[in-house]
Length: 93
Image (cartoon, rainbow, N blue to C red; front, top):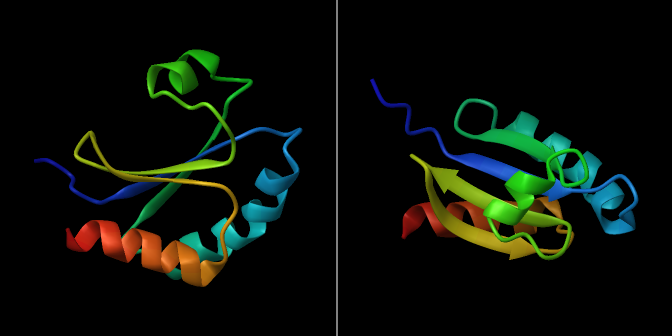
């Protein structure tokens, strides 16, 4: 059985100020969408080959993925409202 739950992947780094600012917003957003969305954080310094494989050039970068396909990407920090519009807009396409 294939799981088609969308996953929001946050590519970030410990040294990145905007990444640190996004972290609590993303955590609250993940809790508010816990039944319908997975949220994962990837430290680009700990997983440089994965970051390179998916073409991450700056942080924070968010990728919305479902069934192995990247549906949308977003660069930079965001508010909870912006995250909601980003995710919902990508899933409606």
